[in-house]
Image 1 (cartoon, one colour):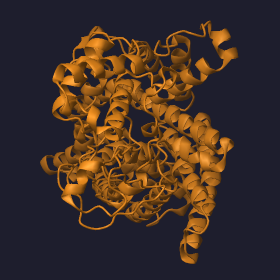
Image 2: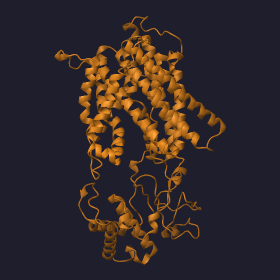
Image 3: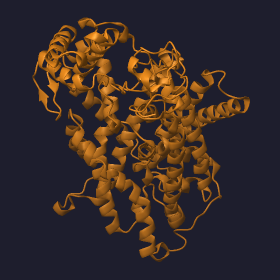
Image 4: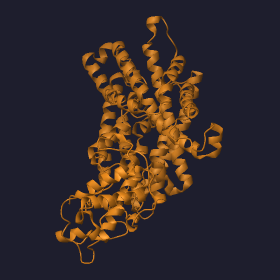
Length: 586
């Protein structure tokens, strides 16, 4: 039922997890069991500032009913100023709800039963006593004003005189629907790693498609395990991945947070390597007769990107970085269209583009699985996406569609290997004609330039918050205890950015750095941790499901160890010039 429709003509459950309390005026519309009339409706969900109308009861799904919590402040006539929320909107809302609660207990004092001036005067004085002076407000046009509590209480009284029973409502536009979740998850997986996907096909051979088919099941299933762990909490679900890791204790929460941090730093280092390769390819300063090596270009990119890291507001970068979605999605299409216009067999001799070796090279599978893990790594954002959904029951279906779309897209990108064979470059765009290479390389450089700060931002904010809460860190950084929490800590940002660039200089091989980050950290975050969390939730799985979970856990641990060994070995062979895998050290 909608917020303004009558209550359903059937008894509704009353439980600690879903407190449905009905107000007096609903009795005339029917549908309330005897003894439950005269009680007030108030819904409180896990979403910040999420309020729904008290004119009726809206139960759209099992998950929404599970999220509902009783509001303890309704039992107080007026919140004490010391217990009021710090946010002006929160304080305003609590004050208004308290007044409404008082009017329900004593209907004769309701503003609709008295003169408007008298009601407004009492509401204004009550709001002043409950809320105090809490600064500026936003008017109806979103412009900040400096009106005090008396003026704001008067505005509330004007609205209450016409609709006392409707509190501030949640804006539905801030909730994610089904297709918005599909797009968000899909966009989270497809990134610059699309450049390396064809090379993962080259590493395992002609049947590389089977590797991605298996990866679809593995990462989709572990995503479902993570979702189950998130929704296992009674009432308000967990809202972040580290919070879910708290199921394993404080140590588990710290391990999850540290793993995500290192994974993001590794992915940012891989971005730097991609930029360095593309700058070497296009040599933008060639018109000045200046040609630099990869190391010099990486250092130059550090100087260019550092100002964006030190920014406090990334709003402009977030809007501009959307062009990166179009660039990443267009790369496989550009490769195929280029082949249709300029057939590969006309540009390369047959022996150069021949597909050689076994149909499935098991020896290189750990290296290829590292690239695949990076291609599917998006589990860290799942809890945040679920926390923003209007109906969390729809997430498994949206996630299934996202993984299916991404897998088909990666299979499309893999056609680059079937076109170029053993000449497949670790970055597939380097197989294109020179003119096409330059255009795409500049687009990739611009995409990463705009996206780099956004990728690193979650790590920066987390570490800055930890430093502000640690007295020793505050002392070392020269921060005062009352210093504003939003001021960037420049030394932290410079050190984190430097760590990414140093990693890129140590492992300047695009395929190996993707494989090293993916086979260890992405596998740990996306496969191992969800399996451990699922096994910790006893009594939720059947025997076959437990067997599959244990199998995936052992599979993830095996590839973490073997893959890390293979990557370290190949990095060493690249430094010594003894690596025999074609283009691996390019």
